[in-house]
Image 1 (tube, chains in turn green, purple):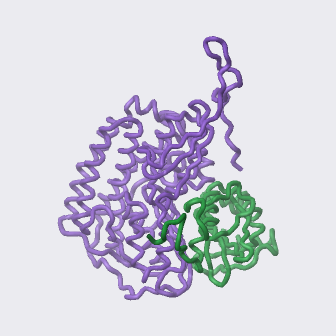
Image 2 (cartoon, chains in turn blue, brown):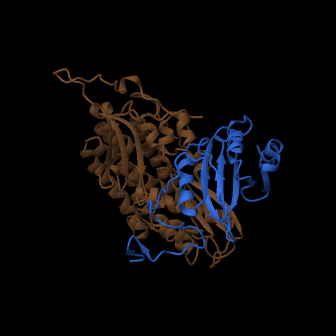
Image 3 (tube, one colour):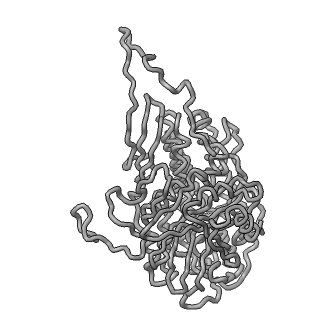
Length: 158
Length: 395
């Protein structure tokens, strides 16, 4: 399926949950409602025409200006087509629904997004920090992150 | 939907089933054991928290991040796009060339530039040499995990020959900074082609020797067959890639299925696990896939050397790289699987965001799924067969 067809079928199924799209980009992307990512993901995975059975990549992004987001790169090993989904949220209310029940690989990727960007992944089965120590403060990949002076009494950078 | 795996009944201990010789009931409890972070079999600083019932693994919880060094944050704070390349080398220090390949591909796609054909051929040759070197480490250390020390020495001897080829080309033996955006740092030296051919001729019988020594060794087969089975659907759902995915019988290789460079002009085929010694997707299958991939790599190198065109090794690119605002996700097949870089440019001279989708990270996340119900001694083999490099897991 082409990106246009995928967009149209999503629009027909979910209506308002499809916020915007850029289908003429190098890799076309569709922005979806952060509170409905799970059902959209499930639809994309199980619908025979799309069958996005594999998630290549899940990345957190800080777009500056208080906007955070998650980018999902999806791929279908059956039909060999790709699509990029995005879900945006604000720094004041950083909540995005988990898709780890749809693709198992999302579990660790979403923990990484939580760790690095502080996006709270709703309905995640095991939302802990993954790369940083459990007692680390702040979320380093945010654009406004300041390196702390001390960590557990040790000077940073030492 | 993947259902949570339930333990086979013979592995679940019945309360009161165990009795001492005097007839007292033995109390059985779950126990938590820590493996690592300083453990020779975790191939780096990985800590596995293991919940065991006797010798049966109930659950494994990997704790990672000991080697985290903020690769993605560093990339956002570089002076330009080129400076990221040496950092990519350090992601997976066993297969540095393949990491560079993925990154330069992402930037080149964003810049919409074509590189000269000679560059593409040299990149393929180098990437395949590196794949052999990396697989040699993988199978060599895997042999050690299984208790076989000699194959490790064989593997490292042959890897040394490949490192000499790299040293001859760019002066470095481990971290090369050889693939540049739009080309290469140096052309290959005149004697390189002959030396590489010589290596291919030498290496082909060595694979058979290695197989006789380790792969088909009866003790090794008994340790690895039917252990740590990764079913096909779980592998796809967890986005496993590389030998992990192919070991489970999925005929999938990015070099063929999402082609880049000049792989589509070369004749070779992906190798998949067939369950020859046990079940499809067991530890032995993942091992044999790596062994057979080395044979394929030799084929690719020979063909690429024969077809190597003359020409320039640097495309005409602007001195100051400023891609138009946009984003791209580029992926290549590294020895560990699909390495992707998600690159966002905001039109300035540094990446706005660079996400590294590390195959080792993703492949490690399936470890709890395939370890439940296994014996504790087999965990070493299961973890070894995922072939992780902690530099890449922790980034």
